Length: 292
Ligand code: ZN
Image 1: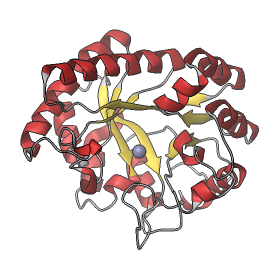
Image 2 (image 1 turned 90 degrees about the horizontal axis):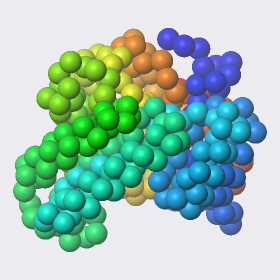
Image 3 (image 1 turned 180 degrees about the horizontal axis):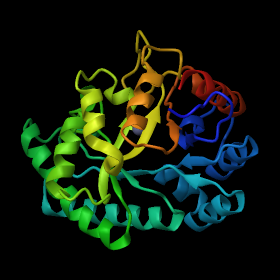
Image 4 (image 1 turned 45 degrees about the vertical axis):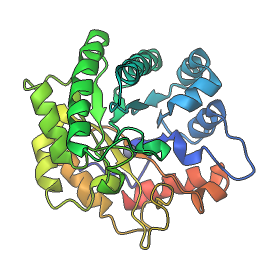
């Protein structure tokens, strides 16, 4: 296992981590400056942040700082209620792929969607099996577009508490089953993003990480699970503050062949988003050395 204690060369910052700092408007370009200024070598930006900063301006800024991407957030949301919704989703996912290519991302991260309409508070039905069938169909269609562009797809299984509204793929096993169905040759065109927050509880985690192997392990996201957790979406903890054994999990992904970045992804409305971006980034660096 790599030694992270002496430097932070394998730290990446998911830019949502410092997107909403209290009293500060940290646009994406400023976030890139703040990361580069601390010797952070990689980031994973969100589409809305890139759109606000400008795609070309972002690409240029990444290049001038020599910053890499550890992923691009995000595509997916494959479920729909009618043909127009399905087409709109496909078009939007193609745009996401094109942006990922422009930015030089190693993969497009997919949050696959839950029951259609649920994210807006009005689920169209209760048929999660049909939602999962739409996800399989949508991922298959996007994979063809992704292969044309040479952009790998990383399915991110989300914690089951998000099954209704964000993602009906909830375990690494489910995600890998879909990968095997779509890409039995393990070509590298499709794999998974392993986010500690979503999968730490899974009794099959070690086994499924080993099953994924190098070809399928495209991203590794870290934060921590707080006890108690006070918000379903925006109460992620800083590494070391919760109950996830991150070094153990990193040991498993590295034993399976993963050698990329540990991407810190913290949505924290009442804690880390209330602090200065500088403090958050400095803390990420320290905790990455000590707790990941
Ligand atoms: Zn994640």
